[in-house]
Image (cartoon, rainbow, N blue to C red):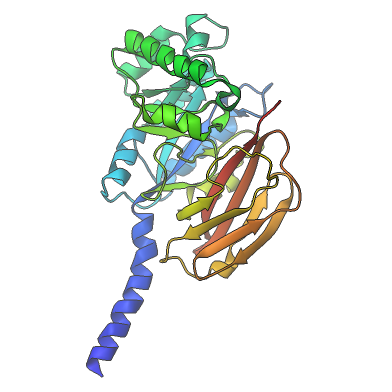
Length: 339
């Protein structure tokens, strides 16, 4: 009888510990583009929104750590503080230097910027220059690659994509003294061919723009981030996303983000066994809203849509209640190539 009681207690403890340990080896990454550039609402956050975000990160139960430290800790199984957050910024607009950096620096919040080198070399207006980048880097800001010309890599021949990676790396190495080790796909778009090129390069990690939480189950060459702009940057949504939990899966189908003849695709994934009550999972697409989900076993979920994806980027997000008002979150981007 005592042995049976012990076994039951151990089983219950494991059920409790598994989600908690997952939360201490995972992190939410947020992504910005522009700051206080109100003529570009789809890629901009208003300064009042940014200041609310910073206030929340500083006053709430969150720990903001450098991007590479977070990724290294997750990869190597080192525990992270609960509610760890990483901050990333894409494209290299000048408002990073003039508006975001002073605020992040005052709050002592580290961040990483992904830059496309052509816009800097061509001295385009409203973009960072190399002197500003070097100044920020000397103060602790890290920089990653974002291709040379910010192209749609999924619609580009392999040889040009390869040349873009080489050119971007060459320019960043020449200006900053070392090769970048992190990459962000322009527009968050990638294909299996692009993944292969990234894997053969100097990059240890690469980010997309699909929503989700990074954990040890995440693909290092296609890491998720939550994108923020004026519409999706209000404080209530910000609190929602920085409190999300991972929804780690394997055997995700289709295996490529590129949509071919089967449109809409038949999506399926296997959830790791420590997550229970998968009947509560809900999935949504950018075209259709809530879509049908079927639980084939205790861990296998199939998602079925009735409307085909449109040309360009399409999103799928799946959520599962995680307790305490938090949500497990899985996102994916599918691309229908433009002819």
